[in-house]
Image (cartoon, rainbow, N blue to C red; front, side, top):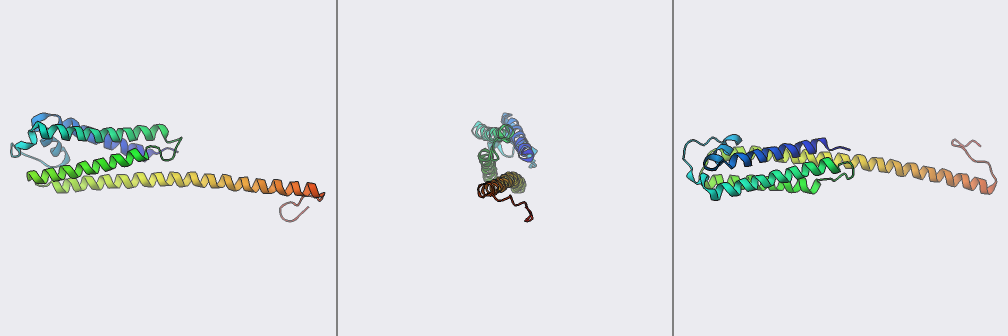
Length: 185
């Protein structure tokens, strides 16, 4: 069974974090622009520390790592979904954990810099990440439940066939005619 929602959400978050990393690379105004994309407008040179290479490079790399994790989860889900029900599950969990951790670090760094309005933006992003994670887990559980149901149906049919074969064998050994369903002979 295909994990359509899981693969779509993994691709979505991969693109979001890759675009944020690309915007951050811009050097002097990269973090300002990335925060502007998120919804926190920063005017002028009010926060000069955001332009330092020591701040921009690690943030860009961290955003890129999260994007790569989501891309990896997308590829894993797309390629191995038919073979395994839990394809990409561990990578998806790591990607969501890394994204949440990075969002928390952005919030802490923004609060330390005194950026106003960042808490609400990060809260919305964390809520979207949580909703995506819950949707992915619900889809995975429904696929696992559907596969388990199919396996139990196969096992029940196999038990019924074994019982019928056993009954037929016993009736042939004893020389009595076979009993058909409903008690008829």
